[in-house]
Amino acid sequence: QIAHFKTFGFLVLRQLFTPEEAAIMKRESDEIFAEGLGNTLPTGRVALQPFFERRPFMSKLAEDDRIYEPIQQLLGPGFIWIGSAGNLYVGDTGWHPDCLDRDCGMIKVIFYLDPVARDTGCLRAIPGSHRLPLHEDVSPLTRQRSDPSVAPFAVSPRDVPCFPLESQPGDVVFLNQNLWHSSFGGRKGRRMFTLNFGAEPTTDAHIAYLQNLYQSNLQNIERMQFTQTGRFYEESFLNSDRPRIRGMTAKLVELGFI
Image (cartoon, rainbow, N blue to C red):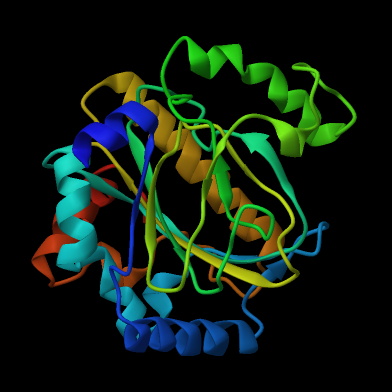
């Protein structure tokens, strides 16, 4: 599994959570969105950060063995908390990587609470595109996000060669954030929730990237999510008495991400 993730940039663990646990996540997430906390983006998508920290069951998932131990194996000791997000998606998502710095070692852990397949909104990934030279070879796909008629490889966005990460409630997708991915054909309001982690920052450049990312996230909250308190990280995580949570947020406190 580790070799699979490092080579292809993703890993899908089937039925990592039980149907009963998936039902709890659905209930807690529905409660959050019912409170009107999410921000509706121009596309119609509803998004909210932070997310998992807002409910009892979901707030424990970042330290759950089924998430924590794979992340520790993939990122190494000293990994840090990047944050969580909840989304109700609308329409297609064009090809893109999430991380703008290939050296930062970030992983997104994805929960879909609705069945998603190749043509109904699952993530499509270009295997190995988190690594050079393929990562840069496929970069012309960026132009398709603003103009789907652009065809740098003589195919439409949805016909780009890829692997579909089809998912059922209870499955968990681990995604290298440098991997090129997309989504097509999903129904309106499909639920996608994420936990995000990063490798221990060991260089000035890595710390500078995290600081810029934090400022960008904070600006998004202040600009769009008017129900927020103007903070990106929840107090319950920054000053948690739970050893695993405290371990992954101690560096955030040290860097002043409060």
